[in-house]
Length: 304
Figure (cartoon, helix red, strand yellow):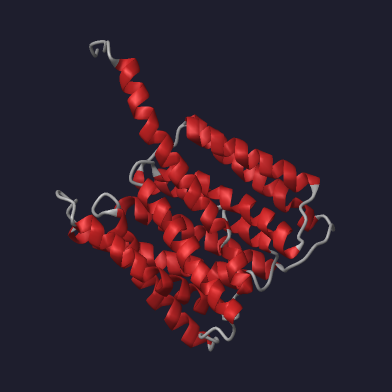
């Protein structure tokens, strides 16, 4: 039995501010990722090539970030376990990027984003079965609500209402989701051994190498052939990767992988709204209701 604490309310107030800041950081990173599909659509290179440029554009910023972190004293030790986790993060993220980018050529942006953001299913189950990280009832409830919202968002695609895309594209997006789930778990483990900047830098180098090999093997066009193409791949690197993945990696140091991954359903809603505004893919009322369910799931994660 622990002794009561008179200063508990004050401590709770002080702890709330950093927690809120980390949650907003996580949500901002997820929002930046939500535009990645738009940038890939606007690029005039292959899916693996788009992933390669995404990493290459981000590397200078990530290098500067890592250099700034090294100036701080008492940085966590890396160790062999940390290097393995970072390498796995880079490889799994490379697979995720290639599969997701490829799915955009065979299915709608909404389908690719929604199916690609089913990663919370893999993260929660993987963390539970492999790492013994048993999710709370609130997290499980938020997970079911998020999945229900994703189903409602994608349901009109399978009921004859403006059905576009193929099962092959949907399968690629689902494979991307499982790869991203593995990436989240690997980053969560890597952050126990290294700073966020170092994790992002090394994993991005590995991801870039994987994407380049895949692009060469698939015979893709690697160099953008227009100003729009260059601007699109630059935005992929700076917005979706540096801000998106960087902020998520930073916040994973404070949030558990299960809670953080649930917020990753947010990019699906961002992608649907962006597709509506830019490509004219107007969501149906059912999809709008699914978006509300996703927002509710985000609030549940915040309180959990």
